[in-house]
Image 1 (cartoon, rainbow, N blue to C red):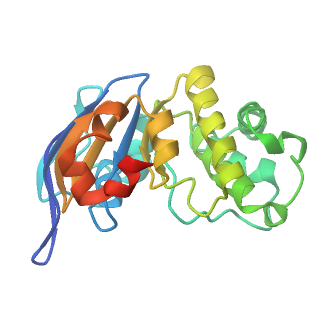
Image 2 (image 1 turned 180 degrees about the vertical axis):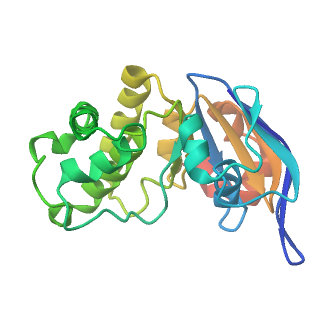
Length: 240
């Protein structure tokens, strides 16, 4: 589904991403992990058109995405969340999700129908007409995901959707993502620092450090990889 080929991005003298290559197959959940500053969000920005690469290519279902604007890439079937959730606080939950649905239609009735279908997947489905300002942080994170799902993506990029959540809320988000993958058929590409979450949700994990890929494999392989332990996980994670 997604093919990233020798992708590079520099900011001045700093190589944020360096000759990165990866693939994602339809139906997978793939994790992207690494230390802060490793280049993870830059990778997402390059895939979704918020940044242009200095080198390399991004191909989605065989078509290059280079030169396309973010809204056009969304139209191809790739949607994303951001680290900082920013709902339209004065609008209702339904209206927030309809904004995503309007990417695929100009018909208000159709957008509302899509939004209601998407909201049915979430815990706040009984709060359609509540203002977004009334939601808790976990609910706002789910609202962010709902708005992206309303664009009807084939590939969903999630950028630290569990940041700031407590242990119980993380467990709930893990179960939600598992259910989302099973029930919606959406392919997931996930950046996450909560290791028990990313390890339990992902079929495969890619690890980057200083913008370079240092490991790739199944979760049980990654946690035993000496280079990953040294660069990111630490011996304490292995002991736990």
